[in-house]
Image 1 (cartoon, rainbow, N blue to C red):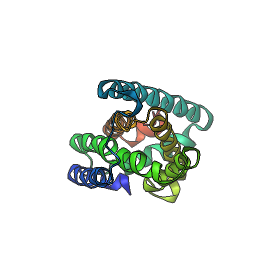
Image 2: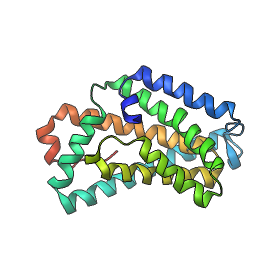
Image 3: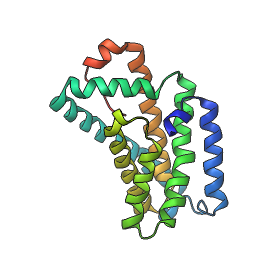
Image 4: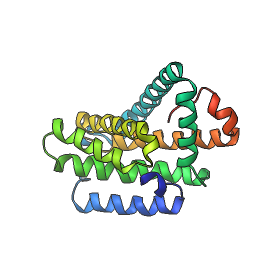
Length: 200
């Protein structure tokens, strides 16, 4: 569902306002810097985490491509085109904004503390996060991937106490991912399906 919202910039920005407002009104955003004591430090760590997340996804993608080749790259290309159906650069940027300023305040800053001890809350919210990104049964592997991303962002939140860290990481990660999908679309399905695709 979230992928569908992100296909139009104005939907992304509207959803961002709603998710952020719910988190803010609940008091979940009182200390965005968390245990780090500095907004600048939180943003810097978030940017480093985004780079780490991109490297990790690249490594996973290469591994899957080496093992499964076309059985992996063709569904991946189809999924990528489905995700960005009708998207342009402004939609990709707004999707990154929604990831950082909407999804993280809602899923991490609001839901994680509401769901009990971190050892239970982080995996539970990761499952909810993955389900919120569900598209179609054929893309089940990407649902699992989404849950993995939810675990990563949840652990960042718990480790730092700062919603800014996962927000910056998630925002950069999604904007780069959507940008990559747009690049795949320009290349065309024939070349993209058989090439070394990079998962966002």
